[in-house]
Length: 300
Ligand code: PSU
Ligand code: MN
Image (cartoon, protein in one colour):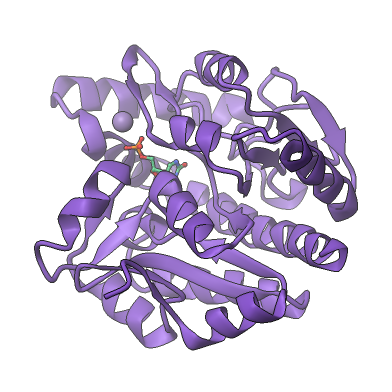
């Protein structure tokens, strides 16, 4: 049996060289509560289709790595208990018929394995604040997987300067979508800079082509700031993040439980204002990713 199940629509799009955008499922199982998780996935998929690309939700369905989960599968996964699946979990989930939400790392790998070149998400994992030994598998995967990952930067629940240092060391270019600033998820700027500003899908396609021509193993990180209307100012979110981090520390939460804990706590502490910003940037990133995927497919 093939190690990865690919939906018929995604298979047909791959064979025809049509633009495809992968979506992760950890945000469905561990990022949002039901039914907001189903709704946001639907809105991202619609934004991708509107721009002429095919969405492919990636996840683990009954133990099987799957590219192109159906709406019914997303619904089932969103309302059931599912585990969080990163790279090290991929060979293990097949031992049990469980559902798994794939992180940026696991989604990037599975998407790349089947030939998808663009992936839209919210924020990447990174180096945790106060815990420089806790480095998300998202980072080494970006350093070794040739895929374009569109995100809104990373939240300041992470150590952003250390996260950028890691990516620099391992050769991952950080592009700013119509900006010179590295975005901080809920806020449009972090005070840090990207390596290069890009203004169109064609520019990203050209850089990706150059990376391949040079036989570089890395992916590309495209960072698109949250739409202005839904931005939360850093001075508003920062105290909430500090509090959530202290609580996590007090409760000795660590490892893979850390990110889901902090995200859920921030929604409570902000009266769900972080949720609105999160949804807005996810739909925006899906649209940006589709634009890039279309430009890359036009190039061939
Ligand atoms: N950061 C966010 N939202 C998220 C995640 C990270 O702002 O939902 C999720 C992503 O799926 C990411 C994963 O790949 O958490 C990173 O988890 P860890 O740090 O355990 O690798
Ligand atoms: Mn971690």
